[in-house]
Length: 294
Image (cartoon, rainbow, N blue to C red; front, side, top):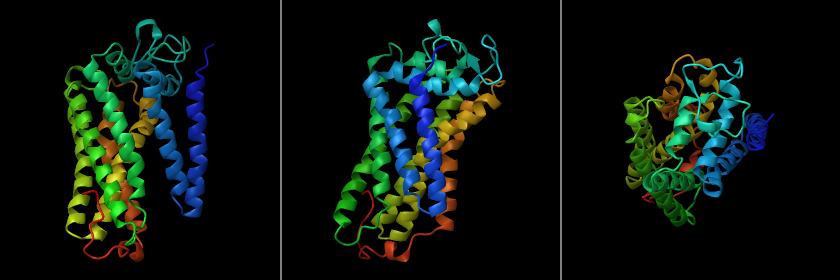
């Protein structure tokens, strides 16, 4: 039987993350949770550049094969599952013959894909990864000495996120013909996801330009929530909804597309209300300073 070592490594990394999450909750310190989550995100994204898109996508699909085939025999399918040519869309060999239909479509869309589509995906992954890493630095207290660096990193973060979001929207415009994603509903859903990410960041920028540092910080935390939702909640939801809703063709992927970003914002909002920023952090800058990504 084939064993997908790379998928098992991802599972092991997620198990480590679960432990660090428990540590973060116990200590009331989010840093272990954030650091490990960011490192795993980078590991998943870097694979696209090291192995190429088809191989990285096959590994990504392999993560969900285990869950989506729970309780099914080897030759048993479901409305939300599909097969692919030579079973090449997975890293499990012949262990699993049916895969999430969205995963099969994802693989086939980037197997011998047009150069423009390939470039758009690489660009989206690259620029969003930069924004994902840098956005956490912006939560640190800056003080007067670090204000200029905070502004510079903010500009890079906002610029990277904007480029990555534009490329995501560009890719989403092609989804109308991809029935496995949900057709036009997936296009609209990805547009809404992009809007949640971009508009929360933009609101933070506007608050910074107005000199309202407390409001700026709140909006940037919401932006971080949207980014975490779009990346991590999107993927985690599929682990649960995939096997639970495999009798319905596209419901699982649609839920992730439409709900991951707003749920991320709601979680960030909840954390923000439970643990507001310390007054010293908010007042660390001079009143008229512009600390956001402008």
